[in-house]
Length: 418
Image (cartoon, rainbow, N blue to C red):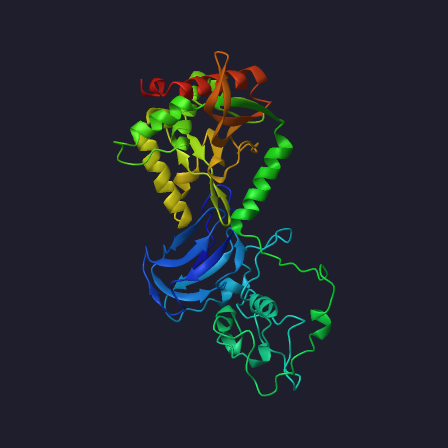
């Protein structure tokens, strides 16, 4: 009997997924463990494994289409088996109309037939041109005339791949004459507004939702401290002379923060509505910027790791994040988060708390500046950090004590090795 393959929930925050690529086509024999497709979630692009032995009888969504979790995306069964009953039963999960999804390659009914939408361009003889919503959108952005493009989709429907190798100025015999640009060239400077709308990625949608919830629900307050980094900078230089992997300033901050959390467990806590959970384990999330948004892989038991282990794992996470290969176990379970913009030259900033944490540490650049020591003016290395706290969990004195411990460890890095 045929079985439905649904969009799985691949992360704790995933509400919908986008099929980036199908690795199988209708009619292919598939076995358990085969990769059916690649799915973009809110945090990574992951492989969708098949769990039914048989033949791929139906594909319910095309590449580039977003569908909610539990929606029907494919059917696997015996060769030649009739799947119309499954489709007619309305087994596909309904889309949430309040969500904004990326334009899809095709709008599909329960029977899998493409829906003809109003507003599609037509040929000179009045026949409607068949094109997916995404193809129409891309054609409009690139200035392409769909009348001169041959479609490769079902029934000659034009889809995204048909536009990839088409010139933005198709050479056709009946192309209209070039417009008169004299008025445009002679217009006063500063006139002519333009913009480009970018569809939201799954990652960006989740970032927007979760951080809005965090900012609105958690009463944030901020504690800022300037830390003497002279000894930390010198220690890092000495360590990197023999370390098997380059240790960064951020690695020192992660280690110092983890040890400070051991001394101040109230900061390593979460608000659960009717209670506060004080975590005994220390899992430090490290914010990493990607073109699509932000990911926060987690260094588990960070207080028990040495600097080489922290540096090695952080670099591994950075590589996996860029390639969109992070897995759920890589980003779940954080109890505290660090966001560092120092590498961009940012001296100080405030960060929004990353749920379920009660605090997040924003780290600025290490900079040379004038300092006074024992009444004498000199040059020193300083770094500004700002701790964002959920006032429901952490009070001002508690957060300040944590920052004092963090500062002491970075001013005396040897204490982190004991």
